[in-house]
Amino acid sequence: MVDAGAGASGAGAEVRQQGQRLRGTRGYRALVRTGLVCWAAVHLLIAWLALRVAWGGGGDALQQGALKTLARTGAGPVLLAVVAVGMFALTVWQAAEAAFGQGRVAEQHDERRRTLKRLSSAGRALVYLALGVSALRLVLGAGSSGGQEEGVTSRLMEAPLGRVLVALVAAAVLAVAVSQVVRGVRQKFTEDLSGDRTLAVRVLGTVGYVAKGVALAVVAGLFGWAALSYDADKAGGLDEALHTVGSQPAGAVLLTALALGFAAFGVFCLVWARNPKT
Image: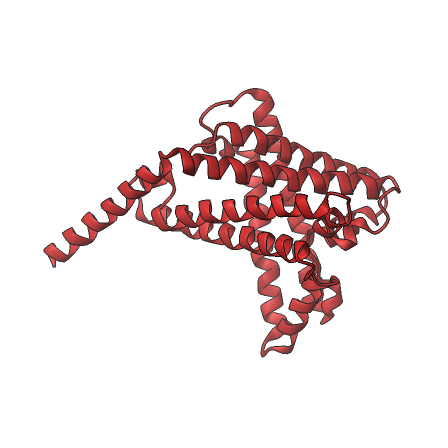
């Protein structure tokens, strides 16, 4: 038993050492920076669309989705290809973090915290992969005509205990929303930076993470309402959430505030890309 425990501990240490060596390579840092720049572009695009809708110039842009709106521009296919590459780069980054453990946490001996961080990275990898595949499908002309969230929710509704499953999705999204707000308010995002922790950077990160958390909370509300009303059409993603905010009294002001928050997060990602802590 002692030998088995020692062997497992040694194997874990070897995995962490391999992860540290990988993070020290130029290629890995270039991968991370590429992904973060593209992630910044996505959030700046969402901010731009939200502002257009807030002040009457965007029509149904948010209902169509940010990536589909981008696809309709003259340079759409090229820009979408860049976004796809960036999302796949982020996928590889987070998959590596999930496999080896995040750099700062991997150096610690708190197995529970290390496991939670690795699971979090795995979840982000899945999100980035889904966005990358969506962008690639649009480049190849295979994008759907919309209603993806409603379609998924409809299939969940048809499953045994379907309303419970949709309610669980709502709870999971709400948990992520709360974590984003907490991360912003407590400025935990500074742990991802190897430099540039100035007041301006901290403000950008705080505003950006809080805005993302608020938007995701609206998404959770849409899924929760779909579960309560047994109506899959009530569900929606981020685009639908922002459209819902814009349709409220003083919606233009609220949507503008969220747009500025997403823009702040986009600029923060550019700073992050300069000095990522890998």
